[in-house]
Structures are given as C-alpha cells and as structure tokens.
Image (cartoon, rainbow, N blue to C red):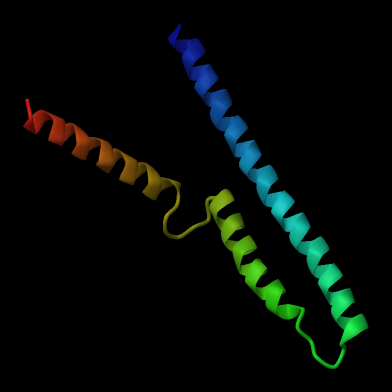
Length: 101
C-alpha cells in the first residue's frame, strides 16, 4: 500500500516538473516570437528611434529568472531553501500548538 503511495507521489512530482519545464519553454517561445515581431515593427515604422530593446530587456530578465527557477539554478530561494523554510514553518506551528495544550 505504501509502495503505491510513494509511486503516486513520485508520479505527481514528475508531472509537476514536466509542467514547469513546458511552461518555461512556452514563455521562451513567446518571448522570441513577440520580440522578433517588435524588431520588425520598429525597423519598419521608425528605424531612427530604436525602442524594441526595452521590452526585450524587461521580458528577458523575467525569462532568465523563470529559467533559473525551473532548472533549480537559483543561488537563493531554490528548492533547498523552500524545503527548509517549509520545515521551519511546520515546526513553528507544531511548537505553537504544543504551547496551548
């Protein structure tokens, strides 16, 4: 019985991970397509005033952080930090419950 539970939990974690990776690649694809469109529009309408790099820069920063998070490359606020913080909160809540008993 416990084996089934562990397999199910593993499957759900893997499924969540695949969904996160697909989300990142969807974001990256949209970033590339939209920014190509911005470059074309900018160069066709006002080549003397280049503005396309501003949305490219802003959205690019977001894409980089999204990739760092999805691929667990965050030097801070990574999975280890998240798990430690959750454990800390759970222990704190348990301690508070025991105080009122």
